[in-house]
Length: 156
Image (cartoon, rainbow, N blue to C red; front, side, top):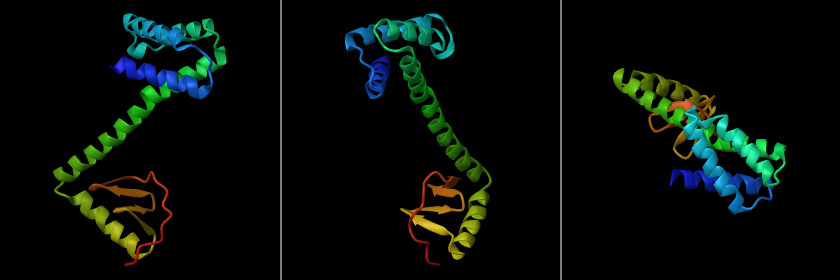
């Protein structure tokens, strides 16, 4: 099931890049490249998967430059973005655990700072979240502000 979803996403990237290749040619290439990546025992099949896919894609008529970009986007969305999301969840969970271990002291300190920033009018309300000078409060632990705030300042 995981390889099927990865193959679907790989094909979607190819379509978005405008690569003209037949589905019946790409699926066997993708699955053979995955098997070669597993057999090579290299983590993530890095290198063996990529070389086989570049050679295979060029054999079915895809330009080498497009094939490399295709693989880079695939690697980005398959490894880098999920890792970044996992790292954010880890940081949030770690913050909650540290806050619990220190009996709520970090939360109290940040709440005090938040009240100071709110009273100065530099905070902006965003659906039960606060975006204050680079801090984003979600659940009970602040994380670096990742959204853009365009609403009016909070009233004290």
